[in-house]
Image 1 (cartoon, rainbow, N blue to C red):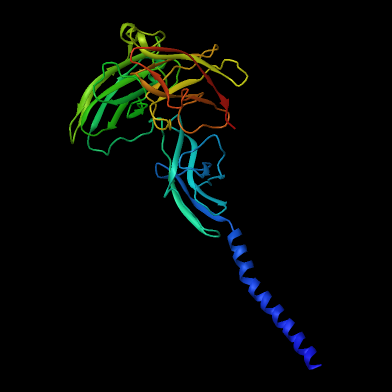
Image 2 (tube, one colour):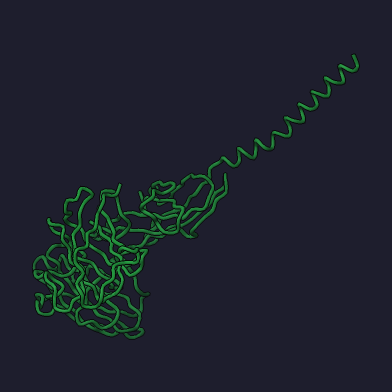
Length: 361
Protein backbone atom coordinates (compact mmCIF):
# COMPACT_ATOMS: atom_id res chain seq x y z
CA UNK A 1 0.00 0.00 0.00
CA UNK A 2 2.79 2.38 0.89
CA UNK A 3 4.51 1.70 -2.43
CA UNK A 4 1.27 2.31 -4.36
CA UNK A 5 0.63 5.56 -2.47
CA UNK A 6 4.16 6.75 -3.17
CA UNK A 7 3.78 6.08 -6.89
CA UNK A 8 0.43 7.89 -6.95
CA UNK A 9 1.90 10.87 -5.11
CA UNK A 10 4.82 10.95 -7.55
CA UNK A 11 2.50 11.06 -10.56
CA UNK A 12 0.41 13.83 -8.98
CA UNK A 13 3.54 15.86 -8.24
CA UNK A 14 4.83 15.44 -11.80
CA UNK A 15 1.45 16.46 -13.21
CA UNK A 16 1.38 19.60 -11.09
CA UNK A 17 4.96 20.52 -12.05
CA UNK A 18 4.17 19.94 -15.74
CA UNK A 19 1.11 22.17 -15.54
CA UNK A 20 3.02 24.91 -13.74
CA UNK A 21 5.87 24.83 -16.24
CA UNK A 22 3.39 25.20 -19.09
CA UNK A 23 1.73 28.30 -17.64
CA UNK A 24 4.49 30.84 -18.52
CA UNK A 25 4.67 29.52 -22.08
CA UNK A 26 0.94 30.02 -22.53
CA UNK A 27 1.16 33.51 -21.09
CA UNK A 28 4.06 34.44 -23.41
CA UNK A 29 2.16 33.08 -26.41
CA UNK A 30 -0.92 35.08 -25.51
CA UNK A 31 1.17 38.25 -25.06
CA UNK A 32 2.85 37.86 -28.47
CA UNK A 33 -0.55 37.49 -30.12
CA UNK A 34 -1.82 40.80 -28.74
CA UNK A 35 -2.06 43.54 -31.40
CA UNK A 36 -0.15 46.80 -31.16
CA UNK A 37 -2.01 50.11 -31.00
CA UNK A 38 -1.01 53.12 -33.08
CA UNK A 39 -2.71 56.38 -32.28
CA UNK A 40 -2.25 60.06 -32.93
CA UNK A 41 -3.70 63.10 -34.65
CA UNK A 42 -3.80 64.41 -38.24
CA UNK A 43 -3.34 68.18 -38.58
CA UNK A 44 -3.40 70.83 -41.29
CA UNK A 45 -2.48 74.41 -40.49
CA UNK A 46 -2.54 73.46 -36.82
CA UNK A 47 -6.14 72.17 -36.79
CA UNK A 48 -7.40 68.60 -36.66
CA UNK A 49 -8.41 67.04 -40.00
CA UNK A 50 -11.54 64.85 -39.93
CA UNK A 51 -11.92 61.83 -42.22
CA UNK A 52 -8.24 61.73 -43.21
CA UNK A 53 -7.16 58.27 -44.35
CA UNK A 54 -4.27 57.03 -42.17
CA UNK A 55 -2.26 54.16 -43.66
CA UNK A 56 0.46 51.85 -42.33
CA UNK A 57 3.16 50.66 -44.72
CA UNK A 58 6.08 48.29 -44.29
CA UNK A 59 8.29 50.41 -46.59
CA UNK A 60 9.63 53.94 -46.28
CA UNK A 61 8.04 55.02 -49.55
CA UNK A 62 4.35 54.49 -50.26
CA UNK A 63 4.29 51.63 -52.75
CA UNK A 64 1.00 51.80 -54.64
CA UNK A 65 1.59 48.34 -56.11
CA UNK A 66 0.90 46.80 -52.69
CA UNK A 67 -1.89 47.66 -50.25
CA UNK A 68 -1.13 49.16 -46.82
CA UNK A 69 -0.80 46.79 -43.85
CA UNK A 70 -3.69 48.56 -42.13
CA UNK A 71 -5.63 51.80 -42.49
CA UNK A 72 -8.37 53.79 -40.85
CA UNK A 73 -10.05 57.24 -40.82
CA UNK A 74 -9.44 60.08 -38.41
CA UNK A 75 -12.23 61.40 -36.20
CA UNK A 76 -13.81 64.85 -36.07
CA UNK A 77 -10.83 66.28 -34.16
CA UNK A 78 -8.28 64.53 -36.38
CA UNK A 79 -7.49 61.80 -33.86
CA UNK A 80 -7.14 58.17 -34.92
CA UNK A 81 -6.49 54.73 -33.45
CA UNK A 82 -5.38 51.75 -35.54
CA UNK A 83 -4.52 48.25 -34.33
CA UNK A 84 -2.05 46.03 -36.17
CA UNK A 85 0.34 43.15 -35.44
CA UNK A 86 3.57 44.16 -33.71
CA UNK A 87 6.17 45.33 -36.22
CA UNK A 88 7.91 48.23 -37.96
CA UNK A 89 5.54 50.67 -39.66
CA UNK A 90 5.79 53.81 -41.78
CA UNK A 91 2.66 55.88 -41.26
CA UNK A 92 1.16 58.23 -43.87
CA UNK A 93 -2.10 60.13 -44.11
CA UNK A 94 -3.98 61.81 -46.93
CA UNK A 95 -7.07 63.98 -47.10
CA UNK A 96 -8.98 66.34 -49.35
CA UNK A 97 -9.82 69.75 -47.88
CA UNK A 98 -11.62 72.77 -49.28
CA UNK A 99 -10.41 76.23 -48.27
CA UNK A 100 -11.33 79.60 -49.79
CA UNK A 101 -13.05 77.91 -52.70
CA UNK A 102 -10.06 75.72 -53.65
CA UNK A 103 -9.78 71.97 -53.21
CA UNK A 104 -6.49 70.81 -51.70
CA UNK A 105 -5.31 67.21 -51.87
CA UNK A 106 -3.03 66.83 -48.87
CA UNK A 107 -0.51 64.24 -47.76
CA UNK A 108 1.82 63.86 -44.78
CA UNK A 109 3.93 61.38 -42.85
CA UNK A 110 4.04 60.69 -39.14
CA UNK A 111 6.49 62.16 -36.66
CA UNK A 112 8.26 60.05 -35.58
CA UNK A 113 8.41 57.75 -38.59
CA UNK A 114 8.83 54.77 -38.59
CA UNK A 115 7.49 53.39 -35.32
CA UNK A 116 7.91 49.88 -33.94
CA UNK A 117 5.30 49.10 -31.28
CA UNK A 118 5.66 45.82 -29.41
CA UNK A 119 2.87 43.28 -29.03
CA UNK A 120 0.28 44.77 -26.73
CA UNK A 121 2.19 48.05 -26.81
CA UNK A 122 1.33 51.51 -28.09
CA UNK A 123 2.91 54.17 -30.31
CA UNK A 124 1.74 57.79 -30.51
CA UNK A 125 2.48 60.02 -33.52
CA UNK A 126 1.46 63.33 -35.06
CA UNK A 127 0.89 63.83 -38.79
CA UNK A 128 1.05 67.34 -40.25
CA UNK A 129 -0.42 67.37 -43.76
CA UNK A 130 0.99 69.52 -46.56
CA UNK A 131 0.00 70.36 -50.10
CA UNK A 132 2.58 68.86 -52.52
CA UNK A 133 1.27 71.01 -55.38
CA UNK A 134 2.59 74.12 -53.62
CA UNK A 135 -0.74 75.96 -53.56
CA UNK A 136 -0.89 76.23 -49.78
CA UNK A 137 2.83 76.60 -49.15
CA UNK A 138 4.13 79.22 -46.77
CA UNK A 139 7.59 80.21 -47.92
CA UNK A 140 8.85 82.49 -45.16
CA UNK A 141 7.87 84.17 -41.89
CA UNK A 142 6.43 87.67 -41.87
CA UNK A 143 8.84 90.57 -42.30
CA UNK A 144 9.77 90.57 -45.98
CA UNK A 145 8.18 89.66 -49.29
CA UNK A 146 6.13 91.09 -52.14
CA UNK A 147 2.75 92.81 -52.37
CA UNK A 148 0.52 94.44 -54.94
CA UNK A 149 -2.82 94.18 -56.70
CA UNK A 150 -4.23 92.81 -59.95
CA UNK A 151 -6.77 94.33 -62.30
CA UNK A 152 -8.80 92.02 -64.51
CA UNK A 153 -12.09 92.23 -66.31
CA UNK A 154 -14.99 89.79 -66.18
CA UNK A 155 -14.33 86.20 -65.20
CA UNK A 156 -10.56 86.49 -65.54
CA UNK A 157 -10.18 87.87 -62.03
CA UNK A 158 -12.13 84.97 -60.54
CA UNK A 159 -9.83 82.40 -62.16
CA UNK A 160 -6.59 84.18 -61.38
CA UNK A 161 -3.61 82.36 -59.88
CA UNK A 162 -0.35 83.96 -58.77
CA UNK A 163 2.87 81.92 -58.94
CA UNK A 164 6.29 82.87 -57.61
CA UNK A 165 9.50 81.38 -58.99
CA UNK A 166 12.96 81.71 -57.50
CA UNK A 167 15.35 83.70 -59.72
CA UNK A 168 14.78 85.78 -62.87
CA UNK A 169 12.79 84.16 -65.71
CA UNK A 170 11.76 85.81 -68.96
CA UNK A 171 9.13 83.13 -69.52
CA UNK A 172 8.16 81.65 -66.12
CA UNK A 173 6.55 78.27 -66.60
CA UNK A 174 6.48 74.80 -65.13
CA UNK A 175 5.89 73.32 -61.69
CA UNK A 176 9.10 74.68 -60.15
CA UNK A 177 7.28 77.57 -58.46
CA UNK A 178 7.95 77.92 -54.74
CA UNK A 179 4.45 79.08 -53.89
CA UNK A 180 1.11 79.73 -55.55
CA UNK A 181 -2.01 81.48 -54.34
CA UNK A 182 -5.31 82.99 -55.44
CA UNK A 183 -5.24 86.75 -54.74
CA UNK A 184 -8.29 87.63 -52.64
CA UNK A 185 -10.19 90.51 -54.27
CA UNK A 186 -7.17 90.99 -56.52
CA UNK A 187 -4.88 91.95 -53.62
CA UNK A 188 -1.83 89.87 -52.71
CA UNK A 189 0.89 89.87 -50.07
CA UNK A 190 3.35 86.96 -49.98
CA UNK A 191 6.09 86.42 -47.40
CA UNK A 192 9.48 85.70 -49.00
CA UNK A 193 13.08 85.53 -47.90
CA UNK A 194 15.45 88.17 -49.35
CA UNK A 195 16.48 87.40 -52.93
CA UNK A 196 15.49 87.66 -56.60
CA UNK A 197 12.16 86.23 -57.80
CA UNK A 198 9.76 86.15 -60.72
CA UNK A 199 6.04 86.65 -60.20
CA UNK A 200 3.70 85.11 -62.78
CA UNK A 201 -0.01 85.86 -63.09
CA UNK A 202 -2.20 83.45 -65.02
CA UNK A 203 -5.90 83.54 -65.70
CA UNK A 204 -6.76 80.19 -67.28
CA UNK A 205 -9.86 79.96 -69.39
CA UNK A 206 -10.17 76.28 -68.44
CA UNK A 207 -10.34 77.18 -64.74
CA UNK A 208 -7.71 74.52 -63.98
CA UNK A 209 -4.59 75.01 -61.88
CA UNK A 210 -2.00 73.08 -63.88
CA UNK A 211 -0.59 72.70 -67.36
CA UNK A 212 0.98 75.13 -69.84
CA UNK A 213 -0.89 78.31 -70.80
CA UNK A 214 -3.18 78.11 -73.81
CA UNK A 215 -3.70 80.77 -76.46
CA UNK A 216 -6.93 81.87 -74.77
CA UNK A 217 -5.37 82.48 -71.35
CA UNK A 218 -4.23 85.86 -70.04
CA UNK A 219 -0.89 86.32 -68.30
CA UNK A 220 1.64 88.76 -66.88
CA UNK A 221 4.99 88.44 -65.14
CA UNK A 222 7.39 90.63 -63.21
CA UNK A 223 10.97 90.10 -62.00
CA UNK A 224 11.59 91.66 -58.59
CA UNK A 225 13.98 91.68 -55.64
CA UNK A 226 13.08 91.30 -51.97
CA UNK A 227 15.22 93.07 -49.39
CA UNK A 228 15.47 92.08 -45.76
CA UNK A 229 12.84 93.66 -43.52
CA UNK A 230 10.64 95.09 -46.28
CA UNK A 231 7.93 94.20 -48.80
CA UNK A 232 8.52 95.02 -52.46
CA UNK A 233 5.43 96.82 -53.78
CA UNK A 234 4.75 95.92 -57.42
CA UNK A 235 1.82 98.30 -57.59
CA UNK A 236 -1.14 97.48 -59.82
CA UNK A 237 -0.62 94.70 -62.37
CA UNK A 238 -2.93 93.95 -65.28
CA UNK A 239 -3.50 90.76 -67.23
CA UNK A 240 -2.54 90.67 -70.91
CA UNK A 241 -3.29 88.41 -73.83
CA UNK A 242 -0.58 85.81 -74.43
CA UNK A 243 2.26 86.84 -76.71
CA UNK A 244 2.07 83.93 -79.17
CA UNK A 245 5.62 84.54 -80.36
CA UNK A 246 6.98 84.29 -76.81
CA UNK A 247 4.74 81.47 -75.58
CA UNK A 248 4.12 79.57 -78.81
CA UNK A 249 6.38 76.64 -77.99
CA UNK A 250 4.48 75.81 -74.80
CA UNK A 251 0.90 76.34 -75.91
CA UNK A 252 -0.29 74.07 -78.68
CA UNK A 253 2.73 73.45 -80.91
CA UNK A 254 6.40 72.64 -80.54
CA UNK A 255 8.94 75.33 -81.18
CA UNK A 256 12.25 74.86 -82.98
CA UNK A 257 14.88 73.33 -80.74
CA UNK A 258 12.49 72.24 -77.98
CA UNK A 259 13.32 69.07 -76.05
CA UNK A 260 10.15 67.00 -75.92
CA UNK A 261 8.54 63.58 -75.60
CA UNK A 262 5.46 62.59 -77.59
CA UNK A 263 3.32 59.52 -77.13
CA UNK A 264 -0.07 58.09 -76.25
CA UNK A 265 -1.90 57.10 -73.07
CA UNK A 266 -3.95 53.90 -73.21
CA UNK A 267 -6.11 51.85 -70.85
CA UNK A 268 -5.55 48.17 -70.07
CA UNK A 269 -7.93 47.39 -72.94
CA UNK A 270 -5.74 49.35 -75.35
CA UNK A 271 -8.16 52.26 -75.77
CA UNK A 272 -6.83 55.87 -75.71
CA UNK A 273 -7.39 57.73 -72.45
CA UNK A 274 -8.43 61.38 -72.37
CA UNK A 275 -7.81 63.86 -69.55
CA UNK A 276 -4.47 62.42 -68.39
CA UNK A 277 -1.37 64.54 -67.78
CA UNK A 278 2.25 63.40 -67.98
CA UNK A 279 4.68 64.43 -65.25
CA UNK A 280 8.45 64.24 -65.71
CA UNK A 281 10.81 63.52 -62.81
CA UNK A 282 14.59 63.22 -62.69
CA UNK A 283 14.41 61.08 -59.54
CA UNK A 284 13.27 57.47 -59.91
CA UNK A 285 11.16 57.76 -56.76
CA UNK A 286 8.96 60.26 -58.65
CA UNK A 287 8.33 62.20 -55.45
CA UNK A 288 8.00 65.94 -54.93
CA UNK A 289 7.44 68.43 -57.72
CA UNK A 290 7.91 67.27 -61.33
CA UNK A 291 10.16 69.33 -63.59
CA UNK A 292 7.57 69.37 -66.38
CA UNK A 293 3.84 68.72 -66.76
CA UNK A 294 1.97 68.19 -70.03
CA UNK A 295 -1.48 69.48 -70.95
CA UNK A 296 -4.23 66.85 -70.52
CA UNK A 297 -4.59 64.31 -73.31
CA UNK A 298 -7.44 64.61 -75.79
CA UNK A 299 -9.83 61.91 -76.96
CA UNK A 300 -7.01 60.37 -79.02
CA UNK A 301 -4.87 59.91 -75.88
CA UNK A 302 -1.90 61.70 -77.46
CA UNK A 303 0.42 63.86 -75.37
CA UNK A 304 3.32 66.23 -75.89
CA UNK A 305 5.60 66.88 -72.94
CA UNK A 306 8.09 69.74 -73.32
CA UNK A 307 11.19 69.38 -71.15
CA UNK A 308 13.48 72.15 -69.89
CA UNK A 309 16.62 70.19 -70.85
CA UNK A 310 17.94 66.83 -71.94
CA UNK A 311 18.67 63.94 -69.57
CA UNK A 312 17.07 60.83 -68.10
CA UNK A 313 13.45 61.18 -67.08
CA UNK A 314 10.87 59.05 -65.28
CA UNK A 315 7.33 59.69 -66.45
CA UNK A 316 4.20 59.47 -64.35
CA UNK A 317 0.69 59.64 -65.78
CA UNK A 318 -2.24 60.89 -63.70
CA UNK A 319 -5.79 62.00 -64.34
CA UNK A 320 -5.45 64.40 -61.38
CA UNK A 321 -2.46 66.26 -60.00
CA UNK A 322 -1.53 66.86 -56.37
CA UNK A 323 -1.42 64.50 -53.40
CA UNK A 324 -1.43 60.71 -53.38
CA UNK A 325 -3.50 58.78 -55.90
CA UNK A 326 -7.14 58.49 -54.84
CA UNK A 327 -9.73 55.81 -55.67
CA UNK A 328 -11.09 56.27 -59.18
CA UNK A 329 -7.98 58.09 -60.43
CA UNK A 330 -6.12 56.72 -63.44
CA UNK A 331 -2.36 56.38 -63.00
CA UNK A 332 0.59 54.89 -64.85
CA UNK A 333 4.33 55.29 -65.35
CA UNK A 334 7.18 54.82 -67.79
CA UNK A 335 10.68 54.14 -66.46
CA UNK A 336 12.50 53.27 -69.69
CA UNK A 337 13.71 49.91 -70.97
CA UNK A 338 16.41 49.48 -68.32
CA UNK A 339 14.44 51.10 -65.50
CA UNK A 340 16.84 54.04 -65.48
CA UNK A 341 14.50 56.50 -67.17
CA UNK A 342 13.89 57.64 -70.73
CA UNK A 343 17.04 59.15 -72.25
CA UNK A 344 16.76 62.22 -74.44
CA UNK A 345 19.34 64.73 -75.67
CA UNK A 346 18.92 68.49 -75.54
CA UNK A 347 16.85 69.67 -78.51
CA UNK A 348 15.70 66.16 -79.51
CA UNK A 349 12.15 64.88 -79.93
CA UNK A 350 11.44 61.39 -78.56
CA UNK A 351 8.32 59.88 -80.14
CA UNK A 352 6.30 56.68 -79.87
CA UNK A 353 6.12 56.45 -76.07
CA UNK A 354 3.12 54.44 -74.87
CA UNK A 355 2.00 54.57 -71.24
CA UNK A 356 -0.61 52.25 -69.75
CA UNK A 357 -2.86 53.71 -67.05
CA UNK A 358 -5.02 51.79 -64.61
CA UNK A 359 -7.74 52.91 -62.24
CA UNK A 360 -6.82 53.08 -58.55
CA UNK A 361 -9.07 51.27 -56.07
